Length: 141
Image (cartoon, rainbow, N blue to C red; front, side):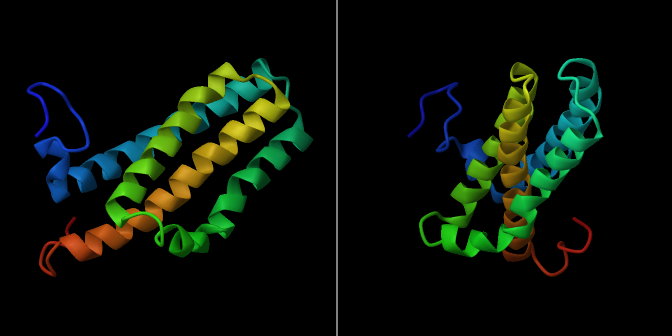
């Protein structure tokens, strides 16, 4: 049992399925929008990207989306709920680290980390929503 006041994975708040779906539904757009706003200003003013580097960055951002089918492989090793949490952490970590690596390679790496989290999270969120919500609840959620 989790200690009082400590928020671990075993905390009752994280055991409630709808709470996890809510956190994923809020966390994903906030992290992605934050990354996008930061990136649009940051790459030009601090990292001095031109059109070529921005094009490569956006192309790299889509590679994990193209490879999102690999989520099936990952589910051989992780439970869906745990993989969804890991994906949310990757999304947040990639977005949070973006400002700390103002180099071409640093921004490319943080973009791929963020994108992996985003694309895997989207797949897991939809799957878990369909499993955990009733047929009546699913359309409105």
